[in-house]
Amino acid sequence: MAHDSSSLIAIIVIGLVLAFVLGAIAHRLKISPLVGYLLAGVVVGPFTPGFVANQELAAQLAEIGVILLMFGVGLHFSLADILSVRRIVFPGATVQIVVSTLLGTIVARLMGWSWGVDVVFGLCFSVASTVVVMRTMQERRLIDSERGRIAIGWLVFQDLLTVIVLVLLPPLSGLLKGEAGAVDLGALALALGLTLAKVVGFIAVMLVIGRRVIPAILHYIVHTGSRELFRLAVLSVALGVAFLAAELFGVSFALGAFFAGMVLSESQLSQQAAEESLPLRDAFAVLFFVSVGMLFDPAVLVREPLSLIGMLLVVMVGGAGTAVLMIRAFGSPLGTALLVGAGLAQIGEFSFILADLGIGLGLLPPSGRDLVLATSILSILANPILLAAIDRLRPWIDRRDGKLAPPDADIEAMREELRMTGLQGHAVLVGFGRVGSLVGDALRQRGWPLLVIEDSVETVKRVRAAGTETIFGNAAEDRVLAAANLAAARILLVAIPNGFEACEIVKHARALNPGLEIVARAHFDAEVDQLVQFGADIVIMGEREIARTMIEYVRDLSVDGAPREAQRAGVPPQP
Ligand code: AMP
Image 1 (cartoon, rainbow, N blue to C red):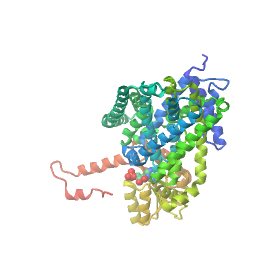
Image 2: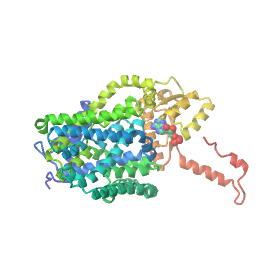
Image 3: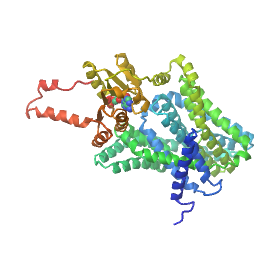
């Protein structure tokens, strides 16, 4: 059977393979693989000779990538996280969108369209691509940091505003086209009210019903013990909620998926859910970049170079600069402001959607779309370069931030100072939370030379204040584990709840010291097996130990009697 360009399989196979090859080459040349993925798109796109993939299908595949990505982000996020940055994000993003739109309008003005057209065009340059920012934050493990929260909050806010703009454009199109009296205020108010009601309705449904039902379904499935079913359940939740959000509530796929993840984030299954959706997410995110690349018509570089430069300046200097200033104005350190600003210095999927709608309504000439696409691809291409430039400036930024003693610079400084321990014959304890702190105290009392590895700043400060040597960082990172001098250690105790990371740590540790005694913590039978496979000598499963203590307690209890004081005293101390 021959596969023509319109077949789904041709796109997936050729898209992924080309992205892989060009991504690997980009990596080899020490540039971001993103560039490779985008170029793969240009190669299979309609503007270059040879194979031409079906754009419609590519865009839909990309959408799945967006959904899984936002779902994954939601899994790391709680409502409290978003609200914690609202003071910066709400006013900041509003001002940034207004400024970007204004600047975009001014540049469009120079091209001599009507002012209504200019505004719609300007709007296309005010919202960043979620996928690009998320990739940056994930690559740098910043999702859980202050910077990550500001960037994600900013995107969620932009996303919400875009949804509103998308709904308001059709009733406003008459006015924007300059047809006097064409605007129907009633219709406008109705459209706005309806949209807001739908968005609020969707959020309410997710928080009230979704929050209970979704974790309950996953808990039920996890007890069937079938990994396959669990994976399927996770995908069903992510894709299903996103689809419903779009179909029933008119909310974007991205926002729907984000909320699906967020209602799961409080459940203890969130970590597992994230792991299960990871491989698919990465594959589809790559297809997103391929599909963006496909839209690029290199001819626009020659046709309209000046407009293009103007729009690039709007996005990369105007919009991003406003974001930096706003974040600074609200008291965040320069490092945070620059990083978030650089992340936002590009446009993507929302701009395409806005441009398409504008063209559909007759507000934008089709040539406007080419400019939006070209600006998008060039700004996405420039993004890794911008971030690398900021990394170069880091010593200078840190020095400036150092004077202000910002919270994030503190963390960076602690990360930097990673030094090889001088301990020998020591116990290495990973994690100093509910489990680790008890273990650590016991080890200290028995006079063990103890080294703690922790990735929570507060905990590190506390443990250090108590006089115990502590390495700050994620023990799953090679360089962190290397600083613990495992080759000379007696025993490694992995006391963290995340089985996936625990496996990584055990695997590395075993490679570093084949004779080391390794004790690990687990919560599921499957984790126990895996940890043993990776080289743990003893794996203690929390749930089994809890059960054992409970059984012990009831065993000594007479059926009709009250608990005896002696047994009460046997309850392990609470940390
Ligand atoms: P708990 O579940 O209360 O015992 O807490 C686990 C502790 O381990 C927390 O203090 C975390 O900050 C810490 N932790 C979790 N993962 C890691 C890791 N990969 N490396 C270092 N510390 C970790």
